[in-house]
Length: 185
Image (cartoon, rainbow, N blue to C red; front, side, top):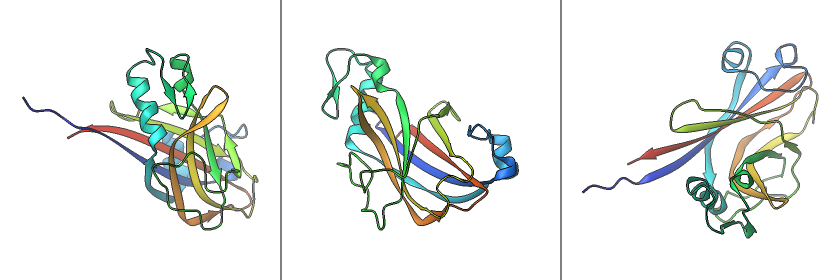
């Protein structure tokens, strides 16, 4: 009998969106709008950290038993929902490590809680969020992280360094697509 190994990979893409095409309420563009109006400004792989792998396992197990993730007790499957994307602007952030629990400087430039979720394939999920037009002008976006909130504590799923930094321009929104995929090998 042959066994398959399940692997998890992640990728983060950052798009600039001219203000006239950005949604006034800050919701992300859909795929068609993104193709027509946005420019890809950063694209790279992301590290799923230890707590993120633990969280994925607890999701697969439907949070049965008495599990914990990142030292936080999980009371039900709803505790494992991805709830935030944090964008940081640390100068020279450290290389992501499996033991990371927060962005490099500990204080994100912006925390995005209006995430849209889609399933581009049967084995992937996409979390999408937007920094609205004229928010954080002139700041350099240097890292992105995805978080669940368990017992009022942010628990990191993954982290990506944005290098070179994306500098926020006036009149422009920035959309983040955070993709997580499963594959058998």
